[in-house]
Image (cartoon, rainbow, N blue to C red):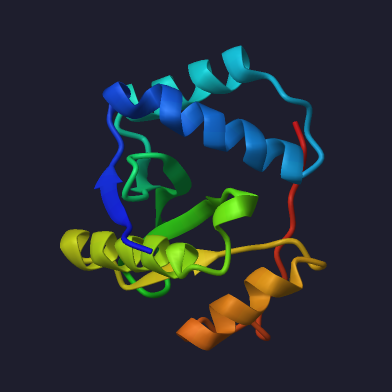
Length: 149
C-alpha cells in the first residue's frame, strides 16, 4: 500500500477530526465531532502539537499521530510525547502505524529532542508488540501517576 504522510494544518482538520473521533470511540469515549474539532483546531492554531496524517493512494485519510512537547530536567533535553496514534480498522496491518511513528522520530530529530515517549492501554497488546518491535523500551524504573483536577 502506497502511503503518503503529511504534517496536518487547519486545511486537513476535517480529515483529522474524522480519524480522531474513531480513536476516541476506540478508547470508549463518546463520539463528539464538534468538541474534538474545536480541541484539535486550538492545538494546531496555537502550535501546541504536531500532527501527521497518513493518506492512501486514493487520498483517503487512514491514520494519524499527534505529538506534544515536554522537557526532562534530569536529562536536560526536549522530549516528543507521542500522545495519540490511530489507524482506521480497515487499514491496519499495512505498516501505516510504523510510518506514522517514524514521522514522530523525524520530528524529534528536527527539534533536537533526546527521545520520544509514549503510553498505551495495558490491554492494547497489538500496539505494545509494535512499539517493542520498533525499539521502544518499557520503563521499569518509574511509575507514572496522575491527579485529576
